[in-house]
Length: 265
Figure 1 (cartoon, rainbow, N blue to C red):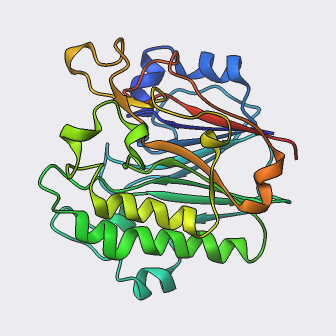
Figure 2 (cartoon, helix red, strand yellow):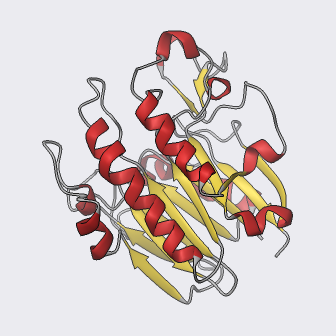
Figure 3 (tube, rainbow, N blue to C red):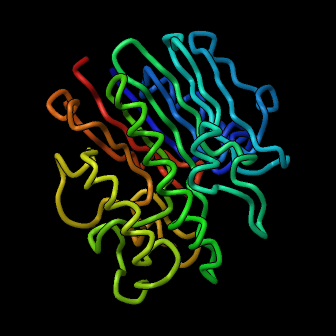
């Protein structure tokens, strides 16, 4: 079972560049999770008849959004956070809008596990979305994954908009305290680890140099001066069936590259 995740930074853009379908035809994912689709289903010309498509698009055109392409039809699909968690954790709108209307979470249930794709809100340069992230979004999303886990194991993946440790970005010292590397965001990620979820890449690779996002400035991608903010995490019960975990920096078309795992399941 091959599960891939990719922040495409606009599905119409990567399609126009001619990289999306060839990527799928080369990598052959069984399940492909997308973030930042910036489109509704049907707005991009995609000819992949062997895949079922599920889209959670933002109310605002050309913004945010997630999707799942799956060779196997899920048992059930859930769009967004459950209402009770939205209420419990006060995941409400701020000056930037309501994250519940931005298509940021999509959950698919399969026979043996759940797959969740997530596009976590950016903290913003002035850190004005840190309260949303730290007090509401991260705890609510963790609660969502833990609730699913009561039924069967969970694979969740996507753009979490945080570098967990100093190994997860090329220049940690000058970026400490800035968006994507604040104590609050890093704590939010650590809470997933403390809850028993496994950062799959770290089962196979140690140290720095493994990045999934690069700035467009200063030839950052060619020099591999980047950040690892895209992840695949799994329930601890799946740890022993994770055969591999990889990043795919040679796949272009977005400022992010895909990440993947292979499960013996």
